Image (cartoon, rainbow, N blue to C red; front, top):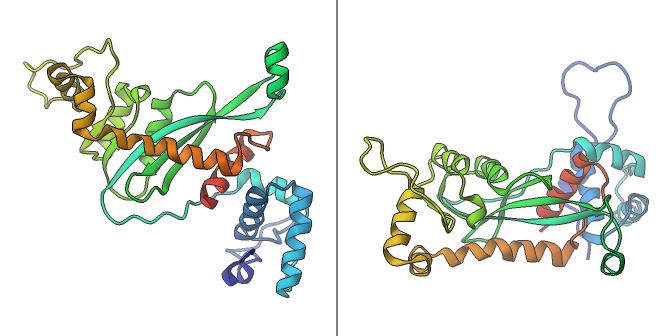
Length: 273
């Protein structure tokens, strides 16, 4: 069953905004492009297949609208802003994590037999997930060299609604991530310090204690395992569950070749999920 909202059909053509600029005018709204790209992601189609499939579905619906060709879909996907359909009902407890997505390179058999080549590379998908509803609240796609703490700053900033608690693994144990969480008004930060962690701000200062230092002092007092049980750190694994859902449904590969289109593809898939 394939269902398309009537509002999407009604808003298929873009509404004029302000004086008409010079040159060619867009014939399709962002919502129409997003609808077709979501069909492409869910059914695993190419751009040409998406054009034909969209035309068949709209003909069955009796909708008197045109379907953009595959070139238009590819070009518009580079600058498409995709909003996640999230609902917030109060202060959130978000869990953050990241995973790798392949973008091009040889298959697994060739890598096992002959090793990876220099061209093989991937992107990192960073997710912010609501611990209570399992909804994806924010998504960031970066190059492989971006660390989790840097992308985690953007996740916390882009999460809608007030955030009360953030949980993540030891990769987020960096000062810049804690500073961003505190700037966003996060009360509780459950990130286990590293094994060789040291106190950042000693207790004889006049400044208020840092959440990270308080976690480290508590771990030294009762042990790392008991601290995880005490703060409910096991709930962080729900971020890994979201990653599992993403890869089971859409696979672990991005089909787009450029980073702007890969960002759109990742956001489209998360919105569908």
